[in-house]
Length: 59
Image 1 (cartoon, rainbow, N blue to C red):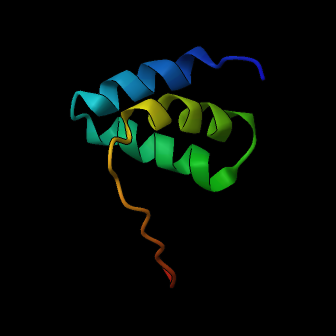
Image 2: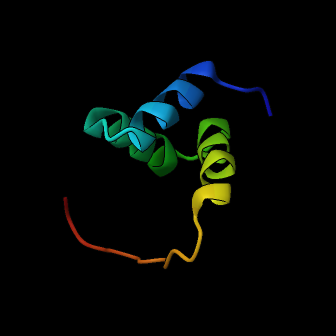
């Protein structure tokens, strides 16, 4: 899986509280593919005792 520097930069910004960066990361996850895998790889070590929540319905 090739690293996407933009994903790493966005992840750092999102961890710092930047809402726009978090929104972009969520868009990557929704689309799937390599960037979504990279987001998951970066997020997993920071998950701690997080819960998984599923939401459905229109935007």
